[in-house]
Image (cartoon, rainbow, N blue to C red; front, side, top):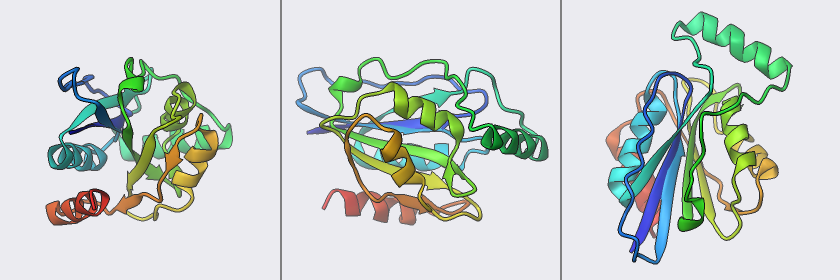
Length: 180
């Protein structure tokens, strides 16, 4: 049986939730994701349900504002500075996972900045990494490829972009296509 972990990037308030599978299971998967407005978190939860994955939430050390316009201004400033905000913690048992679903809000065609911090802080050698993002306007773009360039190894897949308010069937189709 494969254990899946979903890692979500939470840019605002969030609680770390890792639901570990039995220690004697030989393969594992993690979903890593995070989100300001909830779409990425929703997708991650459905991926976890569909795959039996654990979930880990990436949280920026300093919370992002809830007001959209203020958040956009801060994100633009961080983009211009090539900022990599600190995160509160990382997956302590990353070596236990074989598959990593990495979810994030897509800002102007790239992953939200705390995701870069997470990717640089973890070793992905021997792991299959499947990026997924949510965005109301941007496609997946080069976001997955850029993360793969930042990563310490891993077999990075093409990934998937989900629109704002994705349907349950879109997410199920995605997870079904992964398991084939």
